[in-house]
Length: 178
Image (tube, rainbow, N blue to C red):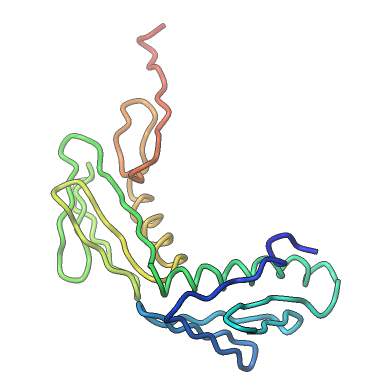
């Protein structure tokens, strides 16, 4: 039995969950999210607790048991608190500015790079070098942050690039150190 799948999900106040046609619909103070459930996975709501179980013991169903439970837990956390990621621009002349619904990055290329915001995600620029990404969908917030970081990932010699706020970049010695 899956260790993660066995855990029940306690619903905080203000969150309502409905299950219909293999779709779990979650509504909370921050918004609404949906999770598609596979046919062999059973989702039940009992006394403010969501229990995820499975019908069969085949390998694919066992693999998805914990996954579905984690996706539902992430949605519960998203509709109550939301998710946030912060990116920092490190490098001389690297800067960011809000532009319409997206952002414009100057990160060492011959032209500024324009980034459009994904649906359900908000981007806030603080100063010239900090980007705050917020939303209720954990996957969308993470994908937006990864897409922005991919434009100029941090390099190991000078540490320049776009990095997560808590990311530690391991530095290498240059060839002059020998």
